[in-house]
Image 1 (cartoon, one colour):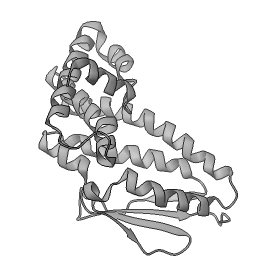
Image 2 (image 1 turned 180 degrees about the horizontal axis):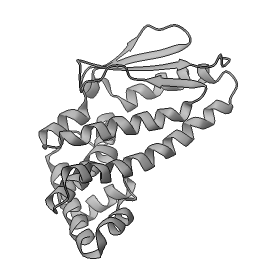
Image 3 (image 1 turned 135 degrees about the vertical axis):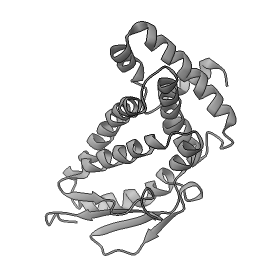
Length: 212
């Protein structure tokens, strides 16, 4: 992949605001080195990736995971500590997650909001967590809940392969922030995760007696 193609991927990714934050944090000279290294890493990661960009898993990789990983690797390569590199990437993921939360929050104005959310989520789950990449399984649940499990994680596997395990919790935090946009009427929790067990359990449920 050429650098111009890598630049275009960054511009469309969930961390597309990273350049300004990088400049503010690290100054012009260091930021320039980090941005150049980010493009080089993303070009390399994309060339190594076999998943086609148009597949459900590919859209997650090229639009979300690989740009964040490339930025993290560039930060570490330019003398940024692991803790600070995670915090820097986490800030970008959180910025996008807050936008997602605001979008989800609009559902709360609808009548029968949980019924609408559940129908929407059933369509979106296979796209957000493709079974071939996440081992996703729907679980039986009462009408006031939606539950599914993830038995493997594309993000964790790739981050581990590139020595970036420390970045994995940042993606979990971004999901939590996005789904918190459903509060106060619809709750979300994840009582088990692959970081400490054999599956991530996602549970959405109606709160405060909201009509569904």
